Image (cartoon, rainbow, N blue to C red):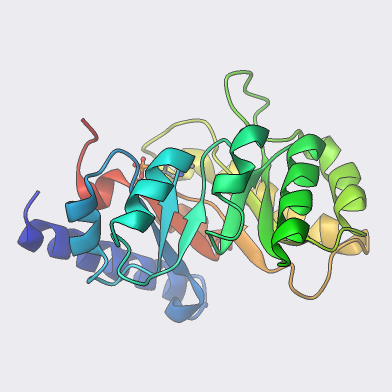
Length: 232
Ligand SMILES: *Cc1c(COP(=O)(O)O)cnc(C)c1O
């Protein structure tokens, strides 16, 4: 992957994102492009940081540390999007603007404790497993209410919204029912009165499906392969 290819990829994705936004009657600038940079060398990540990427998405605590130490993000923000073990929380809290993958009470409480220790408030999303896939992370939709109840009184975390990774497909139309289900869940969550005015982030859509996600209300899409090429 050379710089020209990388630049072309990001430009094409931004064009498609903007077109999808306009089709949905939305403002293109209301949707963030998160570059899922797992398994990419720091040098390539650093080159991509000069392009129209809003935020980086990291899957592993160790890679996050390596990229941060190497200055790979060139000052751009980073989110954590991978599954997080409670014993790695210290390596992530306070280092990223948003932890998108909180899916259980124990992890939520561990993040809260670490954030309190550091004297900060950590923004998080709850990750929802919409299709009930055994192999995947994510809370059951029916567990969202209790997670919000647990989070509500905590001072170290602020719940910003929801994230989902629907069953793998390259066909946006197949993913669309999942995206609309996540949007509906967000509407529902607001009605429970357990969320604040900052509950505004809907993270969904990847390579091949981000346009469908934008049509269904995504405010942040996470794209890896369409930016960096197939992972080795
Ligand atoms: C890798 C990854 C993506 C991006 O997937 P691509 O198919 O490479 O676009 C998005 N979200 C998460 C959580 C990921 O791990």
